[in-house]
Image (cartoon, rainbow, N blue to C red; front, side, top):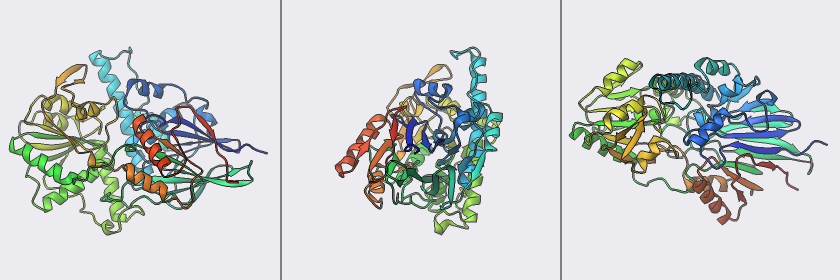
Length: 471
């Protein structure tokens, strides 16, 4: 008789990045999510280490819930290490990964080249974790699966993607497996990253259904989103910054956050609440992702809100300027008059926004809007915590610009929304594993789950758990 399934936490345990969950079932091994570690140096160092306990070539398949790097960004490294099996994704996750992964590889190459040129790396020479070519190679393994369709990544393992409402194409994952010790089947529900009912573009997440075990993210497990409308606060910030002839710098995640911002800026413009200044989207990746969003709105994808299907004008912002090349980005940094600049990366860990912060942070007339989660160890988190200087390109830059917390724009479910999602299961889960959150957030959410008389655990990195069926 074969053994019961084993779940191993190879990432996203005790941290909000690097989600990787290994399932051993019926003699085969499947990796659920394949995320890149970001933020603190000791976490980023894990990207360079082999996956503990499993060689890439041993994996039967990979299943990815959505196209953010902390869930898909390790795939090129995995493929470079010998993985050659299928990678199951939704269609729009595949389309967005075709944008995100090559850009990530290109950025990693540029950063290592820049570090070598400036001589501030601890390594000589500095090398990229993977290259753009590695990323392109990995895309050939993607297999698109429709929401609601059943697929089998391993023997005795049947899976289905349901709508998560976090970003376009994002999914929760239902996995049904045999539990030999009880002679029954069991269902594990992986949340991926859960969206919110208030997402302006996407449907809310579907409930977990008939889950025996739940693996749930806890990015905002210890907090509630601000009840104040972040759109109103953004409008006020833009207005007062323009009045002092300053620049509004918005570090933004290229996938979904930029699209949501443009949706709201378009609405503010229609309402006469957006000052007439240029709006620069300074991110080739964000612009490529925007094309995917536009197409999916027109085609009416399954996770798009019904009222927006067929609308090709939802992101139309007056004065928008798309910046594709480095010369255009440098021209923005040379400006001396007001503009709104949306640039990656969302936590200011790299990309073009870092150059803009270097240029504009020292001037009090400018402002920085932080519109998403800022992980420990990132420049965005330092700004959120009130840093008076920021290390950029090997030197310290004075922070005098106005820094505003607009994380109410987050498309992550907050504590109450996470608890309500778990509580919407068709039956009481045998247990819930709280993952993908900083320690305080995961512990807080686990406490909230237990207060509802349910079982919850916060696994540690590398922990293995035997999954049992109901008796």
